[in-house]
Image 1 (cartoon, rainbow, N blue to C red):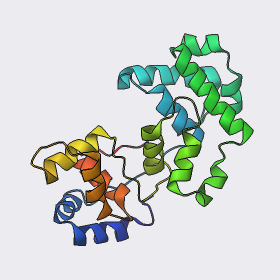
Image 2: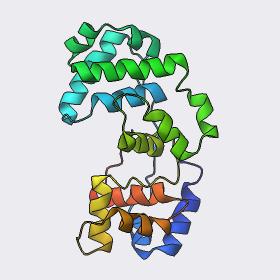
Image 3: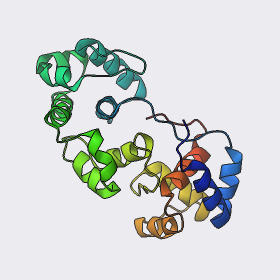
Image 4: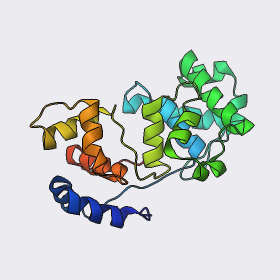
Length: 211
């Protein structure tokens, strides 16, 4: 389902920025899509860190089977994941460190330290702080989660290499931007910086991501 703010965002960005107006016109029928529940999405993000897509998919499939995940989209139960023994997590292919990250994520959900029902009351920065309390979740992962899962409209992930490259290509004649330059450019996209980021990503990779 299309985010409620999407059409208003594309109109506003198109009026302000001629480059985004062109990109929006290039990709007229695609938009952000959320798939899956919060715990499963974050667990999958941890599994996929710093390994190839193929390896991540293999390990993920084993983890789902080992922890009783089910459904379409797949849902993992944080209680069952939290009770999964370390040797089982190693057997499915997770490193010792990633196994602890996944278990720590499960503990946060089971204890209520991370409760999706409370998130609508949190602003973006407060939610990022809550997410990065989990071992293995850094700011970039949290920002991706806010954009792709929480569908937050105004996130600007300045550490994202793809966004850096796209801004360089479209606005700076191929020069990689500084963080300050990205923030200054992004100030003109408020309150829809996530949407601007998404279209700049599409300019590098036309296939939309489902997080």
